Image 1: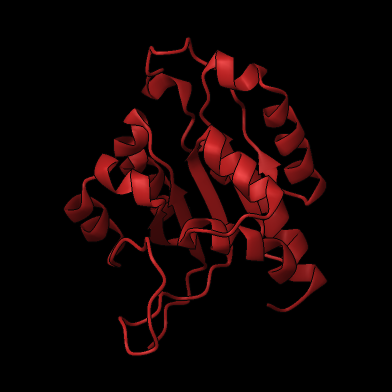
Image 2: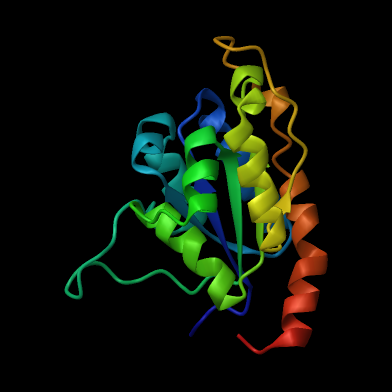
Amino acid sequence: MESQAPTLYVVVCAAGIADGVGELIAAAHLGGWEVVAVATPSALDFVDHDAVESQTGHPIRSAWTTPSGSKPAPRADAIVVAPAMFNTINKWAAGISDTLALGILCEAYGLGIPVAVQPYLNSAQAAHPACAESLARLRATDVLIGDCVPHKPKSGGGRDTCNWAHVLDLLWPAMHAAATRQDY
C-alpha cells in the first residue's frame, strides 16, 4: 500500500551545518510529509547516514540507479534544498546536471514540482556576481528562496544561520497552486 502523505525530497549540500538536516526532516514529518533525502556527493561526508535513513525510512540517494539497482524512491511532490551551497546554486541555475541532486533540481521546473531553497553562503560568495544572477534566474523559474544571511568567510557560519523550517513554510502556497494547475 502506498503512502498517502505527499513526498518531499530534501536535497542536502556539503556544509558543516548539513548534520542538522534531521531538524528539517523532523519538521517535515510534523507537517505530514514523507521525506526522501538526496545528498550531493560531497555532502555524504557531512551527514549521519544511519540517523537520516532511520528518520526517513529511505536510503539516502546520491547517485543514479541502474535499471537493476535499488527500488526507486517515491515521486517528489515538492523539493527543499537546505543547506544550498554556492556551487549547487550556480550549477542548478546554469542547467548543469552532473549529479543526481542537480538532475532532480533541473528537471523539477519542467515537471512542475515546487522547490524551495535555503541558501547557505559566506559573505564573499554572496558578493560574487554569479550568486545574485543565479538566485534571480531561479526566482524566474518560480523557485522559492529562503532568507539568506551570509556568514563571515572561513567562520563556518552556524546552525542559527540556517532556518530549516522556514523553507517548508514557503512550500504550502506553491503546493496548493500546483495542485490547482495540474494533476501531477
